[in-house]
Image (cartoon, rainbow, N blue to C red):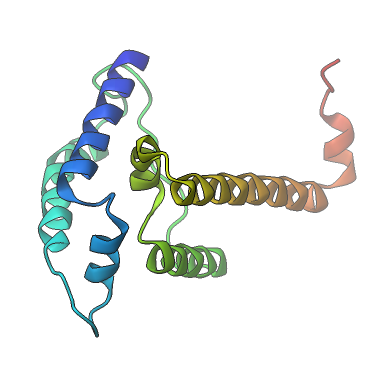
Length: 153
């Protein structure tokens, strides 16, 4: 199972490299519709949607994956403040650096300080969000529920 996930990740990374998604200048040129716009990444996005379309449709009709794991989709739907804030942070970061999480990880092989700085900042942001989420869930948990939860020692 883990080997299959690893191989899929390698294939995804190769796709990002070949498509140019790991080249920040190319991504920024795609995002800059008011400047020297490079529309070539539209084909990458269309291809990604088409490749994912059939498996996603199949997954929605199943309760287990081909490998026997439970199929789990997000339970939240609709637009929330967290979604808007997260999307804005993601978009600003993507526009400023030309990288998002997948291409960032694939770009670490280039070993430039900029790639490592972005990756470190991204991981720090993920950890900070997780800490914030956990702190928020403790605040909203009734004291009686906190006492009822056995502690591991």
